[in-house]
Image (cartoon, rainbow, N blue to C red; front, top):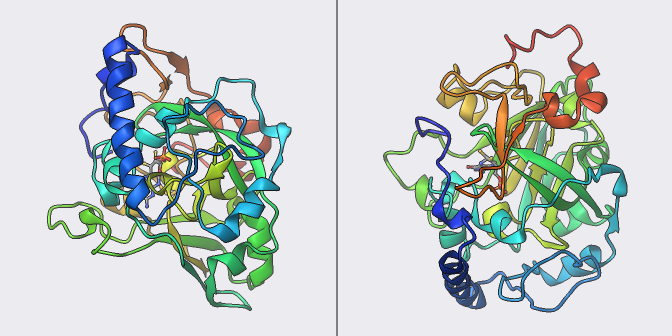
Length: 338
Ligand code: MTE
């Protein structure tokens, strides 16, 4: 996002024999890393794991206590659009998680040792029941759903991903927001020891990464708190152990590795909005009619997108979820509030 133009198509997206072999080599290395990490993966299949995951790629199991929930997850077909899912390989190796580096491959390279259990989440601000909760307790009453959503990055690439999660609204209701709770702020972990970019003196983001939603957006049934993808736990590079997914907004709103959920009366200052206010707004609704100052948002590169025949498709208003969400923005000038 700090780059001058949308990230270029990588040679690894051409499925040549060499690329295929390189991929296998690369992932063998990643699997080796994961074997020594605190995040276990398993080659075993799971109840929901009928996704096409090649045997040589790691499946992230997450902590023991999460496994029964994953196994019991229910596939919610309401959100399937019939579009092809991103191959698992792309979803776990083409990432934005700037805390691990700005290259798309940095998160899978450097996140494998990231400690995601035990994990605490602080609930604070305008709520009747604030506190510092164990993730296990946070998740206890929630059944997981498997939902397929489009993820549209502001950099003009997109993927279709099956997430495992539950509506954020269910979580919010438990903590009983007061009438002053107009916005919800989310914060990623701040941990200089584990997150190399947070140690860097040259980064542009003022850590920790912060995102926010209006309370009605947070309560919308599409807004998902996720703990998994492709029938497995979230890989660390995708935001383990707890990540927000807001499918009608640019991907930067879908904050990873959340440790704090704060309810406030005023619109929070969010990381990208603070970093480059002319380029990234608070709302960040996917909008083909409002270009990024440095590139068009009218189309997107749907991954996988081979170098020689790029898979370019039209971007849809609200990323194709207009029917469900457009009414929340009635009367709002979407060009001004981009
Ligand atoms: N969350 C944190 N904490 N740090 C980040 O750099 N990048 C965002 C979002 N969440 C980011 C983050 C951006 S720009 C995108 S497009 C999505 O994560 C990418 O999610 P993915 O890597 O699972 O595809």
